[in-house]
Amino acid sequence: MSTSDEGIQLELPYMWHTNDEFNKMMFRTRVQIAGILKPLELYGQKEAVVGAVEAIMEVIDLFGQRVRGKDIPILLIDKPYDDVVDLLRRKQ
Image 1: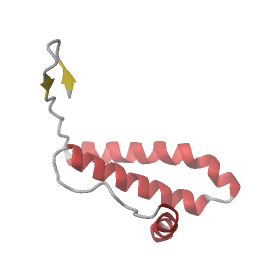
Image 2: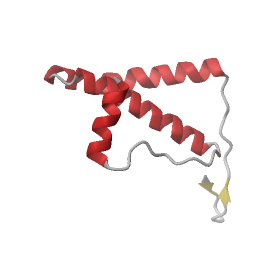
Image 3: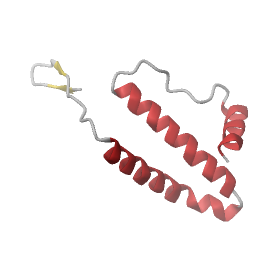
């Protein structure tokens, strides 16, 4: 949303993409996230990095669905530490 000079909230539509475009964007996003987390692999965290990338991609997908109107929670974990460890193990 943006605000005009009068303070009125304006709805800005989100552009929809073809499945092919969406898949390319998700792939590029995955590569960027993996690249950001790559230094952690130097410290023996490769398996955790792979799981973290997958979990982050799921959150991004949930966020995108929510932004476009799907009434779903953006939630993968309830208890930060225990759930994250379990989630990362499942993603490997």
